[in-house]
Length: 195
Image: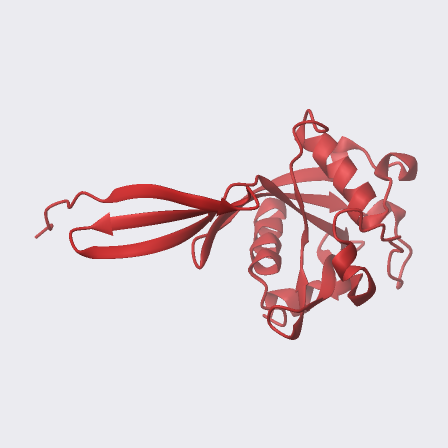
């Protein structure tokens, strides 16, 4: 039998840097606070395919996570800046240039090499949403070598000396060798897009 609906009261507390909102929820005598990210993000998944069109590798951002004291690898993540970006493609081009030093227009990558994979969201411990895009680097990469990214780190000088963009074997990702939720979600969205 379905339980009767109980009214949940919601109030917003002061936010952190204008990006993180603290939402206080109350139901009868129960109370909890929930963190919610107000920023719109994109997650970018550069990848390469084999000659037979299977996914060979992806690129991720490897960095020292000072909050946890361990090394993590995640997708390239950036915020959408409405003052600079008119379209999602604008955001991708700007983000790859600012965060990875990759000018995809100069390299000959076109909109046909960029794919919208879907949404990624997290619910706890913080609610956040990402639009996930993949960019195919196969036509500009060299066999058996890592694509060279020139990191400019325009947005994150704090991690400049302890981070790098690395090539990850796709089999490693789907086998769970990387625990970051954006890597795992992006990889499975990529597989579902091309299968």
